[in-house]
Image 1 (cartoon, rainbow, N blue to C red):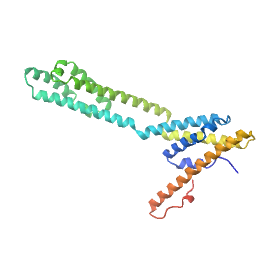
Image 2: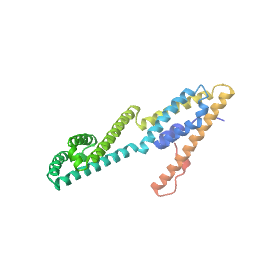
Image 3: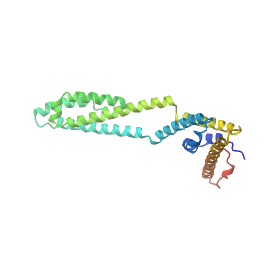
Image 4: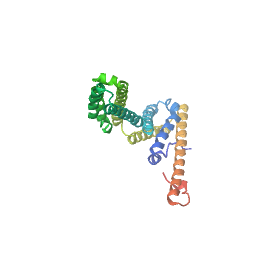
Amino acid sequence: MSTKIDGYKSLLTHITIAQNVQFHHDATGQIDLIASQVSGISPAFEAYRSDAVALDAEFDRKSKSIETDELTLKDDRRDGTTVQLISRIDYHFKFPQNDREKEAARILQFIAYAYRDAPRKNYQAETSYLRNMIADLRKNETGLNLFGLASLVNRLDRENTEFETLHASRANAKEARRESGTLGKLSEKANKSFDVLCQIANGMLLMPFDDATKSALEQIASLLNAQINQYAVNYRRHAGIVAKKKTGGESTDVENIEL
């Protein structure tokens, strides 16, 4: 009975990126312990596992999109604090209780008016605007303390700094991803390294190794072929369901959909 690893090339070009990621995750897990012990294929397996891990990490990052959600949340938070601060300054400017408050509010209002469009600026411009506004307001500490606004300015400063830190780390992460390649390229790389591993294993299966090595190679081939077959069956089943929905007719014979 042939134990050649086969049927994966067409499969990996047809399945989705998500399925591709899961395929490589499952494959490395299936043969990890065995492949690491066969000296002839262990270097190829380590290279493949490294590519599979990089692919899995990038897919996980894209799927969660935590960075984007958190960045938006932090921007909304500082926008809300900015509006609240300017509104309170405007209130004291319009309704001063005495001459002292009138003069203090006039100075603060002048500063707030200069930066009132900050929430409508792009991320980087807003960060700079708020930093300057905070600095100018703090030059008038007496007025801030008079109206109880010092804590609100401190809160805005903290929120603006948190946003700036996250935005910078996100930009650095983007640059790093640009260097490592897109999700599609990482998927292609994992496919190629898997192909190299399979070709080496198939070649070794034809050679007269000792019983232990031969057994390990046959077990690797058996495990991978079983996984390839299962993914192919799932793909055909899904393709049949999709075809049925498109035509409104009977379900397509899943066995006749070629990979």
